[in-house]
Length: 174
Image 1 (cartoon, rainbow, N blue to C red):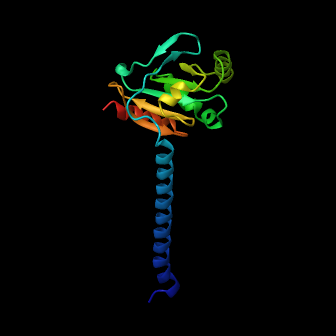
Image 2 (tube, rainbow, N blue to C red; image 1 turned 60 degrees about the vertical axis):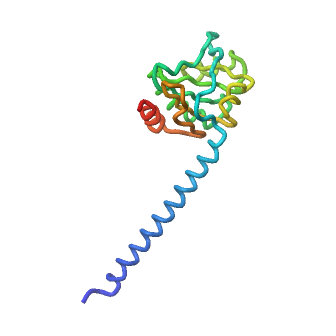
Image 3 (cartoon, rainbow, N blue to C red; image 1 turned 60 degrees about the horizontal axis):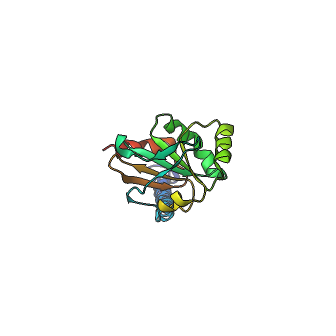
């Protein structure tokens, strides 16, 4: 016959895996609930107008008909935005991104920040937060994926990985 201690380890190990799986599911449910709660006020359906001046002074108007576009709201004073900016800049290099610097100061302030950080991406200025308000953004970072029909396909508040953002852009093509 087998050693009693060895035969008891099987059920004990199974119970431990069940507890870990339960705890992981609870944690996942909490993360999903927090994400949903944070994004509850973000715009959905038809994308609001996005018209303004870029940091370089040229006019901008969102034209999603060329394919899915990522609209990313951020601020120069936001630490999470700083963590995420390399992800956004990498996707912006593909030309499918417009960012909105909300409540970040004047055009000169934003331009200086972009130069200091070595960022080269289109940035619409939203000094007073009017554009952010129209999109339902009450915190940054906030990211929207707008399909070629002008519909918001994804809205996310908080940090997002480059892979996650690229997958959302890819999904919006279908």
